[in-house]
Image (tube, rainbow, N blue to C red; front, top):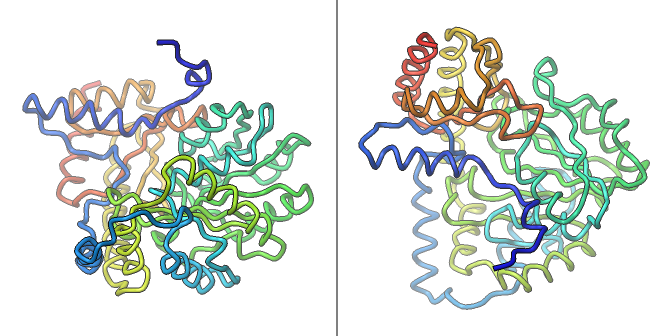
Length: 387
């Protein structure tokens, strides 16, 4: 069967490939500690599960509006207005099966062949994958360790051209856990306003932050008609398998994103959206508990990694990833990740999986128990000592 040439431009997410390899080893009897997949190990809060079950029993099993159920869109708009300090309406919200479709649909809607998109590198690999797929030109801006994995805004300004059609931000960030400051965002907003460039702000980890409060570029003056917020339920509420995400955007773009939903998935499952309403409007103690536990785990893994020969690890300010520098180990990061999986039974990801500037690093997710993190640290330390 002949496959379209553009399929060769579509990348993948290495976390799922490494997970499959780790599962294959487990099937042969090897014990593996999973630090590769970005998934909270907590169960979805009981009140959310009960809301989903109740919705099924009440018959919420039929088609819904492509943009999402009105009650969920209203809840999202209300919560966003409260936390971001700007007025959002339900008409600006599009609900999707997971947050990735918002990313895909926004890039499809705004980027033509040859258009440039600025994005963080190392960064979530699907940004670059989708830019390439639609025929756009990926323009990476390096996230630097000496800046706590924030980019240099001056470098970003130099990368902007007349062909720039979109700037992508991610804070707190995957894979580094870095957090952009308000000053960073103000400077990006200034560039976006000067050049009339939309900004896709990926905020799926906004609730997982360890000091201060999350700040969104959408909160800044002049960004109401340029900011496109990408958010979801997976990380905050431990709902990865539910597949529930959303975007908040200018009204004219929302109409195009809704048409893409109609043409692709038709709509997001109604009973899952009913659970989403409960997630936003119900008790918030469990998500707060998750963040406190993630912070405890962060400190365990950072302290442990910094005791391993050749490893140097910053203490991230958000998300649930560490991105240790392993360049002094003397092994390419991809080979080191393979070695740790097969020899130590610890699944990690090569920093190169997140772009050219990720080489020399590993990404480890600490969305796992302290007990398992300690086992992984002991195994990594022993394995590296044998190199």
